[in-house]
Length: 212
Image (cartoon, rainbow, N blue to C red):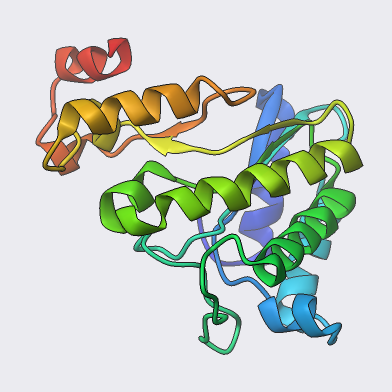
């Protein structure tokens, strides 16, 4: 509720007192250069992960969500210097290896029960459809490597409900079918939902979306 150590500590205490499961949401830069070239991790990244690990709630299950994509969900997340790694296709081996290292590090540090390895992925299909096939190839390879490294870990990717229920695309039926089939291949299906993007404001409107 505020960007202070006290507020953070009190939030974790509230979660410990009132919840069975909580989420760590890591939707920021990725230290691509460090992972690709074996350079030191940026202190802003390593200290952030260490702080989350220090505050881990021992009696609650943990979901960790990690973004592969930028906030616009049309490109890879940038590095801490603002650059995006060059690639011919998203499933280039240097992208795969770096992102696997990124997820492995976070998973080792935080030890979650559930891991979301990319956020709002249907937005990439909507915003950059030419990257969708190479994205699926990349994330499938990374998912398999993570599950081999951490047997028993539940792994998924999140989707936005508002652009699944009412996708702003030319061929909505084809889009919905593609995302439905893709979501059904995952261990579980996390969603984010911003109903105001679609002018939904009433309880019955929300329920229609959830029932979809």
